[in-house]
Length: 380
Ligand SMILES: Nc1nc2c(c(=O)[nH]1)N[C@H]1C(S)=C(S)[C@@H](COP(=O)(O)O)O[C@H]1N2
Ligand SMILES: [Mo]
Image (cartoon, rainbow, N blue to C red; front, side, top):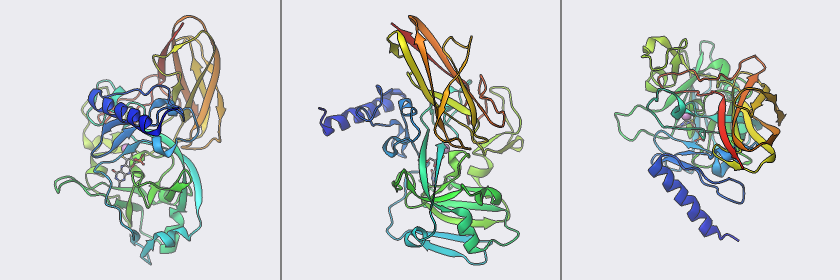
């Protein structure tokens, strides 16, 4: 039996390998083996989930990726949530106040818009996430729409701004502020979450309150939420006017794009990913199974197709789990493995007809990589 200490040390070493080499692939992740994250940076914490964990509907919290611009703020005992701006009654809510309101639970994918950045060609600057800046969890809290109804939104409010309690490391660094249009804020799936996977939010994931915006890129999901402000206009500043924007229309890979030709990114495009067998695996010949996940921020998944002959033929995989916008389902397909090198591919289509592209649409910040996932196995 493995002692807990050895087990933690093994995880720690894997994490250090990630720091030095850029990537560390944990051996087959399962509940009884490695529960470590891949380190992109420790201060602030930017940690990725090993791909093997994407073989199930819910990503356990302790292996759920962490993305933080400045690092978590200090823990305070009497945290408040302010709702202010264009409202009839500004609110100042404690954890007790929020906990006493009706709670709803939504299962949804949280994916960093920069997930897959390392796979864009030509390469772009920024954290070189490969596949691990995503996860699916159940999120429990209060509908933002319910809170806004209590505060009484004034008629000319059109945007809702969010500020977290984390602060930039020095005055020259702009604060991480975001806003979303009012109609998205009152969508019944938009939550101020207090719980993740049935437990109180952990500090790294935004305790005591964080925003949940199913279907939209992770940058909107404000952690350590402190202020919600009703506004006429979208929030200004670096993270709205320069960061988190996409070219208005597709551009040539490597092209320069003027800020005036960009729009804010919102919904996560359709994507599937093979979790197992992982790229580079050696498999025994015979009956095998490929498993992974698929989701879209625009519509529920319609189908996932898998090829085990480098794209010559495709078969539809079985889907598991509830379908929904911004909610992933597990796909599974059995196949007979003959000897030699096998190139496998996965691609998904959503119910609005959005198809995962063979090549991702390149953009200067490397957002939303979603090309067909391709892996190679050696069958022996
Ligand atoms: N206050 C605050 N909220 C934040 C961030 C941050 O740096 N500060 N990072 C955002 C980004 S870019 C992502 S992808 C998600 C990551 O959430 P997680 O760390 O719980 O996985 O949180 C978002 N919310
Ligand atoms: Mo992100």
